[in-house]
Image (cartoon, rainbow, N blue to C red; front, top):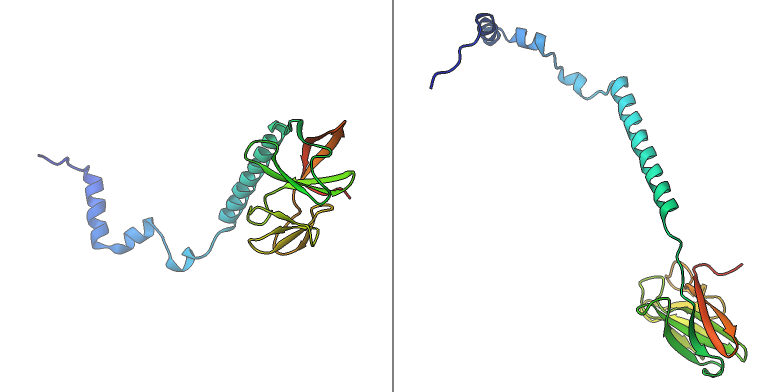
Length: 182
């Protein structure tokens, strides 16, 4: 195999660079002391590109939120009015089969229903009739039966409430509400 010959002037330049290291340093002037400094141009370029990237990300989030479909909850009968005694509990699934909920009859004509998943680590909450609260046994989280707010423990937010409507003798779940009404 025969190697290709370099042009005469390039060969001479390489030979002189080997003899004189100053020529190489002259063509590729890299100073170790200056390497740690960032020029204004480099900083401006970095800040501009970063800002543009963040702007594009925010536009992407905005368009995704505009295109997101609104959640439509099914209207479903979950119990009959006299089915549960005062202080009694009924478990049911809403809005889908795997979403367990708990309904408590707090008085003759009042029912409260919440998601049964604790907002801390999704453990199942249960009703304590003696204390009139919903309790999460995993980390002793306690929720109010009246509005689902956190009374004690580590849960970060209230239980999602199932909004109930009374239609004749039927108790109908119409939607989920994440925050209690003020």
